[in-house]
Image 1 (tube, helix red, strand yellow):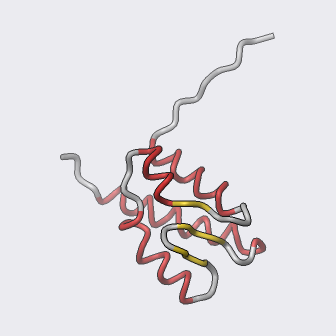
Image 2 (cartoon, one colour; image 1 turned 90 degrees about the horizontal axis):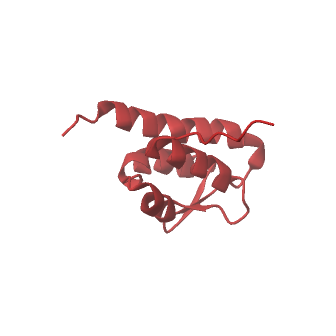
Image 3 (cartoon, helix red, strand yellow; image 1 turned 180 degrees about the vertical axis):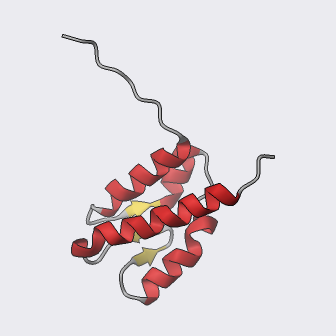
Length: 95
């Protein structure tokens, strides 16, 4: 058989995957932990979207832990969070 390959992913892609997988858990996902692992500052980028999702009752935020109260809408929730990250990443200028 062939040797397995290792796919390198960007810190942003790592953060997106971690958010998606973590939101599927009953305990949710800790944004600080993802920030620590990726070196990205996610909270400020996400805060407006998270506030909107909380006000719509589609997301619970406890400290910096996110939890999806309804897994039936998880896909749509994740897409909105990913969009917030992508939008922020695309508006950053190299420094």
